Image 1 (cartoon, rainbow, N blue to C red):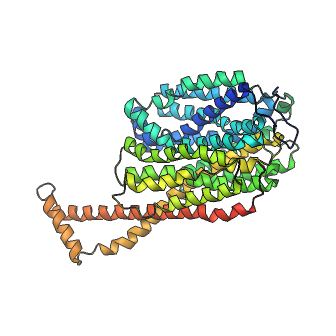
Image 2: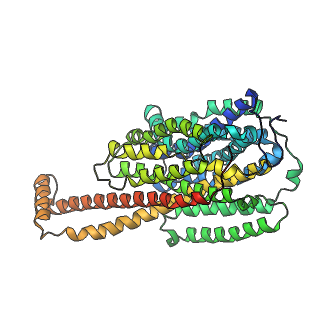
Image 3: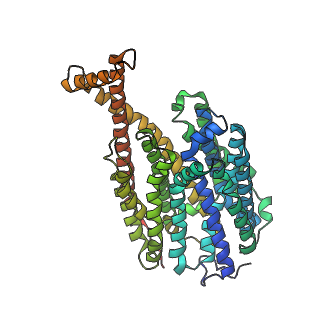
Amino acid sequence: MSDVAAPSGAGPQEMPSWHYRFGFIAAVFGMFMAILDIQIVASSLNEIQAGVSASSDEISWIQTSYLVAEIIMIPLSGVLMRWLSTRVAFVISCAGFTLASLGCALANSIEQLIVLRAIQGFMGGAMIPITQAISFTLFPRRAMGAVQGVIGMVVTMAPSIGPTVGGYVTELFSWHWLFLANVIPGICVTLAAWRFLDIDEGDASVAKRLDFRGLILIALFLGSLEFVLEEGPGDDWFASELIVWMTLLCAASCVGFFWRVFTYHSPIVDLHAFRNLNFSIGTGLVFVVGIAMYGLVYLMPLFLGGVRGYSSLQIGEVMFVTGVAMFFTAPIVGRLTNSVDLRVLLFFGLTLIGIGTVMNNNLTSESGFWQFFWPQVVRGMGIIPASRIALGTLPPQELGNAAGLFSVMRNLGGAVGLAMLDTVRDWRVDYHWNQLIPALNEGRIAVQQQIDNYQAMLVGHVADPYHSAVALLGQRFGVQAQVLAYNDIFLWLGCIYLLCVPLVFLLKKIEH
């Protein structure tokens, strides 16, 4: 047992020994691997698709299977910690994640890769909330600034640099190394966690009280919800019969899950933490953070690859700016959290990210590294201490469960954001195309001159130079419609952040 435990309602009073600090460092590294793997394959899907002979529809499941499995595991982490102990739960999670990573690297078919990615997401998902809970269990309140600064940097930087790391690894080696790179660190983290995370004891009686019906309902609810949000935009939502049935399953299991939670004496997930005002607002804010954080990581490669034709390596080089800005900002913010009101830091963090996102609403078809440079710097400076605000006023016995709920809300925000962005992007592209197409009038002198220029360029190269010239001009209009749609989305994402700023004034002050 750890000597840093504290009475209910209070955190530890003294800094933990180096024995436990090493355990915490191992946990943070494990969390980093789990979060990084969500996005590390994002810029290398084409190479993976070719490597396992997958179709364009099948390859998206490499991401979907990971996210669905992870989001099911995250809220269960609190139960696992109480049942098995923090150390055993983390070791099983990390060891399973490492083995699944090795399996992904050795997979030679898309079916094997999808199943192993699901196992990887499920096993690794517990490391995220367990690490959050460990930080509040081990460290006194006065050290929370630096500790949460490190965790915040990992949570936000890992998905931001994921495509960059993936692009470099795939370019220099092969896509297999996206997964092989987890093996040695995973073994080291597993051994370190077993050696240094002996901070509590498991309670075998928890298994006897385990709510299996609630477990099935939450798996069906979150799994089907994630599936609908991931696959809905590509399948034109309810035009797909499968999406309709999955939506009905989601609705039914949602009702069943909440009924079970509020009526069963020992539910699989305890929602009582939401009675805490700071936790409720903090989880709401992290939901919004998830929308924009995952959304921006998703949007930028789409723009740079689709509009500019950048390679995965070039995309990674552009997106690396956010990670660098976060890396240098996080230690400063961590120090400030010990002396400055967290609500002030949250206010400026939300404002900076909102402004940095709005700064990208004037893109053109020629925008590249420098047009994204300063907006990324501004966004990278906007570190948000949401986890400390949400979890900092809860008693120790609620931290494991609450940390799981907190992480679920961030991932759900990401899933909702990605689904929303795909749908909004298609809608705005159609809108701007319909606004631009009347300008493609051959009666206009500028249009006719452009067609003549294209036609002269194509003579001798195609059978019908005139219609090919008109098609080229139409493609230019299509690109402009896409650029205008991306500008709309960047503007709206920024406004979502800025509209959340007033919520800061509802929070209670957290004592240092």
